[in-house]
Length: 148
Image 1 (cartoon, rainbow, N blue to C red):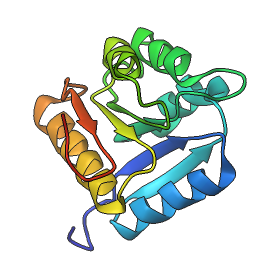
Image 2: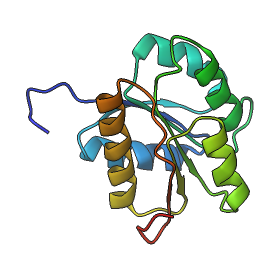
Image 3: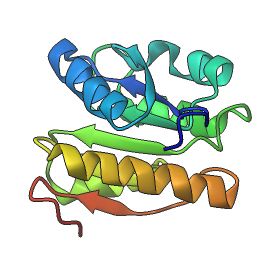
């Protein structure tokens, strides 16, 4: 990324502090700015105020879980265009289906390879820029760096 270009903001919503800090570190090293939340309770208001290029959500969180937060983001006219990527330890095919069903562009399974996470985030952000908002990518990134 050119140094004079604004760096895209990613809102990282993850209840596990160590995982949240790791994801933010990976994304910041890749040229993104991050803002952290530990659950989905304030996701819509913060996303509406900060206007991130992408929201990265865990699924299983206390309070408002990732699917509920994603549904709320999609229902609010201020945030419905913001792309969503789930990063979760939930590995069954039903979780990928649920992720895409609530409007996510990608589903990344933990543990993940840092480069794959960056690749997915870059692709979704670039796709949203081309499409003017949230488009469906339907990527399921696996820990081995592949996708389904």
